[in-house]
Length: 274
Ligand SMILES: NC(=O)c1ccc[n+]([C@@H]2O[C@H](COP(=O)([O-])OP(=O)(O)OC[C@H]3O[C@@H](n4cnc5c(N)ncnc54)[C@H](O)[C@@H]3O)[C@@H](O)[C@H]2O)c1
Image (cartoon, rainbow, N blue to C red; front, side, top):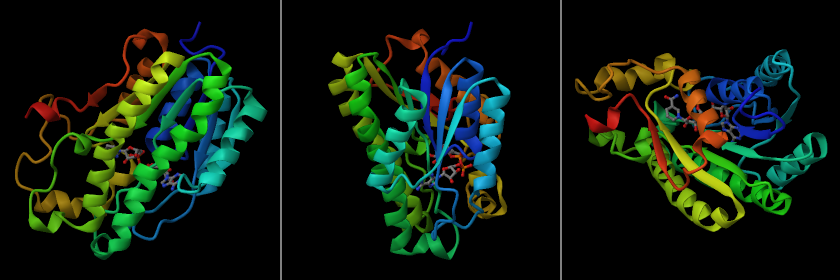
């Protein structure tokens, strides 16, 4: 018996990386999953973004676990598209119990990170996109009366300062830090208001995770410039794996965490205590 038998999860940014790992982990625990992704480039981002082919692979992996998948190509910045995505999920899968607001970009490197466009794209995707995701899923979850769990992927940079020099105060990096901190405010308000409806809301704050966002050559520029110990963590990991975060997500999505809401959950190897 799975921890999420009979449940439906709605996961944004699911074409690859952490979102894919979460979707597959939920399927393994018995959930059907709507998997949403932009599957297209974003101007301020230097590393390669996924394509529809990547989202199709996520679908294949969910189906290999014996569960249903609904792929949706949409941009979390687009409110109408997010409402349509929720309607499609309800039409095809019947309910929503778990929401993972995970879609994100890191426009922190190279020339694009220096333009104000990078600030706006970071805040639009990482903060407004999360608000759209929570707001669009909230009403049908309340109406269904089944309770549920909403989880926002923040970052350790939503809980501490990452800028080690003036160059890091660029629009892309600061848009990222501001948005990852801003979602904590959203989480606390949604947790308070949705608690009476049995809907729990939390943020997860991962340290560096081995996904295309971080593991390519572009981010290496920052690592090479950083002072020793910049990303140190108590457990001595270089990066953690998407599955490490997915295990945290399954716990927060399942009844095992029924008493946890309004919390910032660090998945950081102890980075925040260094
Ligand atoms: N990789 C890390 O080190 C790390 C650390 C802490 C937090 N995070 C956060 O984890 C989340 C997942 O990132 P990841 O590491 O899996 O990187 P990733 O680049 O592999 O995955 C991010 C996914 O989000 C999608 N996406 C981006 N903009 C979108 C939009 N406007 N609409 C819909 N989908 C969109 C991308 O297409 C991609 O599939 C992000 O919110 C990221 O900020 C990452």
